[in-house]
Image (cartoon, rainbow, N blue to C red; front, side, top):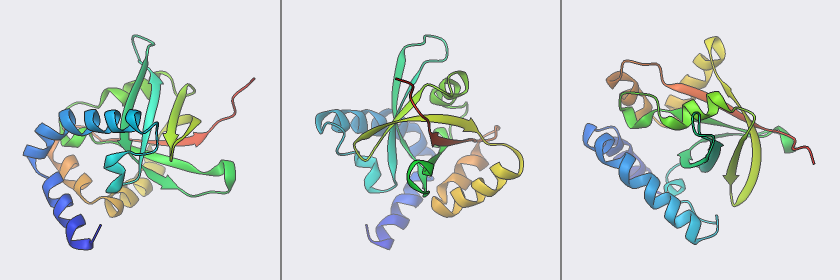
Amino acid sequence: MAAAGVRLVQKVSSTRAFARIAPHVVPAVDRAVHRLTRGRVLLSARMLPGVVLTVPGARSGQPRTTPLACMPQPGDGDREGWVLVGSNFGRPGHPAWTANLLAHPEEAVINWNGRDIPVRARLLAGEERAVVWKAALAFWPPYAAYQARIDREIRLFRLERREVSS
């Protein structure tokens, strides 16, 4: 997408109206398109890189699937990773998927570029979180508007590949 288009989308996504509407529309459309294309297309990934996270629910234990923007962290082969930002579009309250990752950090799977990858999730804190937050703001400036509107610290998670025992 052209730079002007990206800036326009960033401006719109920083608004309160977007925060009210997008959580109901964007994930539903993403899930439907992802399912219909057998994991090959994630519409929101046309703007930002995206994954589809599946993790057991914190209370139910039932698989919960959520399309999310991510910040890929390049690495060597199995060392690649991803950062997820629990912004909840700048709405109060942490998104449910963050509670699921906190409850089941070793049971998450992401679909990345059409491949299912078992991952381990780690909530970032302290200096590591500060460094990643700065990178997140450079990656998607609307995160600053989201943080300014809410009374909680946005959760950041690092996802890394994990081995699955056979």
